[in-house]
Image (cartoon, rainbow, N blue to C red):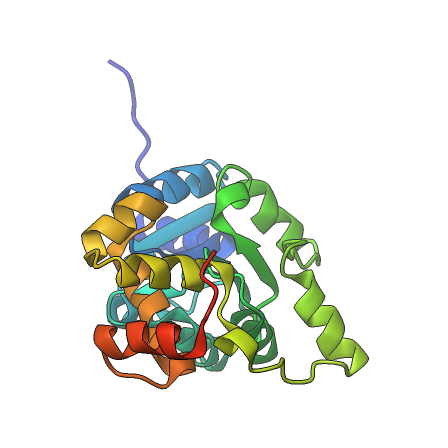
Amino acid sequence: MEYIYTPTKLEASAIMKNCQKILLVEDQKHTRQFLEKKISQNNDCFVSAVGTFQGAKTLLLEQTPDFLVLDLGLPDGNGLDLIGPAILANPEMLILVLTVFGEDASVVRAIQAGAKGYLLKDRALEEIGDVLVSMREGHSPIDHRVARALLELVSGRSDPKPSEGFDLSRSEKAVLAHIAQGRQYKEIAYEMDISINTVREYIRRIYKKLQVNSRFDAVQCVSEYNIALD
């Protein structure tokens, strides 16, 4: 008969103390499961995965993880607002923002709040295990497409951009173009291959930049100010 070793509670507690605790916050279920599997391949880590802002906030206090892998477009809040509580819970926590949002404002705010890395999902998912190892070794992974904002900040040249086009990003313009065509959130999500929550986050940003509160007003703004959406 094969003997199966089962650690005692004391031994299990010691194992948990020595391994890296990682909190993964990602609203897309299939992406969350993929990342959890990739991260868990590292035998010296324990991964908790959650898909909401409130769930993440609760686990931050309960577990005080060593790593926080954080999406920004969550269904019940902005992931950026979790960085502050995370640092308060554990000042040594290593925070990696992993998102589709590459706009300057998000990058700068995340780094200023305490994030040690900022990567875009389209290229970082497969390498997530290596990325976390590099962070543990003292590196700060930053996607080259968003690094310019940080360089401008450090050099003191991060002046406000001109108001032409209301400083809409390429993705925001794409969402706004879909809105102008009368498409619904699900249709926009399908066409752009993003989640509905990400669509909502883009629309929230669009409304804020255009200073409007409705789809109709946003479309009117495009027409009134001749905003180029291509």
